[in-house]
Image (cartoon, rainbow, N blue to C red; front, side, top):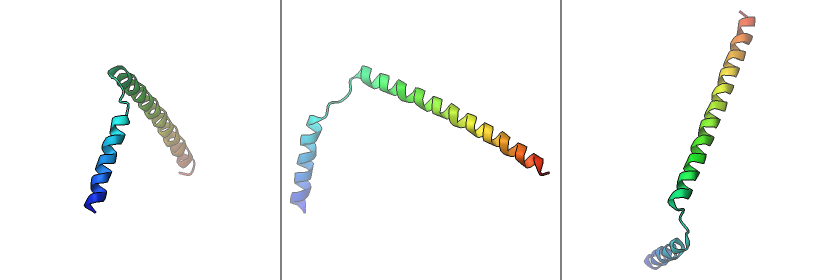
Length: 64
């Protein structure tokens, strides 16, 4: 069991050396893109929620 764990740890180290990490500019631009996307999606979901809430209130109002 210890041999397998040691080999796994060694393989992880080898693979981590192959990783290319983003530089500061790539990280900043990716973060901005993600934040803009999240804000747009939040607006869309909020607008859909408001629309369907209004629609349901109107439908319920017809039956009262």
